[in-house]
Image 1: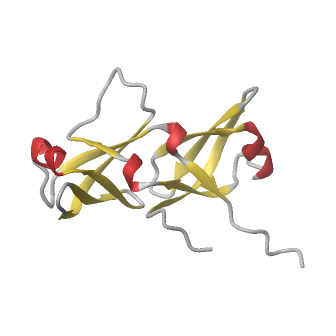
Image 2 (image 1 turned 180 degrees about the horizontal axis):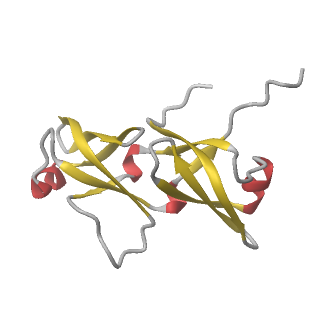
Image 3 (image 1 turned 60 degrees about the vertical axis):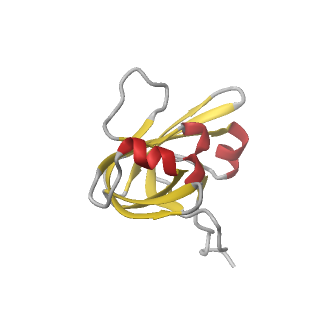
Amino acid sequence: MTLSIRNQLPGTVTAVRPGEAMATIRLRLDGGQDLTAAITREAAEDLALTPGTPVRALVKSTEVSLATSRIGGLSIRNQLPGTVTALTTGAAMACVGITVDGGGLTAAITNEAVADLGLTAGSSVVALIKSTEVSLATAPDTTTP
């Protein structure tokens, strides 16, 4: 399966906390960072998520916000430090390529935000991702015919 979602970070489930309708899933990304995903309980059950399950965290580039440092007092659970590696601007929007430990991310933000943050290649940034914007995928089971 090919997806248009650019941000696909491999990791392993470390904890599953099911609720009545939603479940929070903690992951350890291959780069060592922790990430939280909030998905429906039904989806967590369908994916058979348990600690140790290998997954890919999927995040649309439009759902990645950027800051120039970590932010306290914020409800966004996922704050991944990284470095800007690429910056492509269009008429109104920019695509910002970011290297984080264990992978890369793309953030689609406004040109105004790029200017306000003073972003250039080599800038240190923190990628901010709400847990509700993280989808999870597992590899298909190839052990059964």
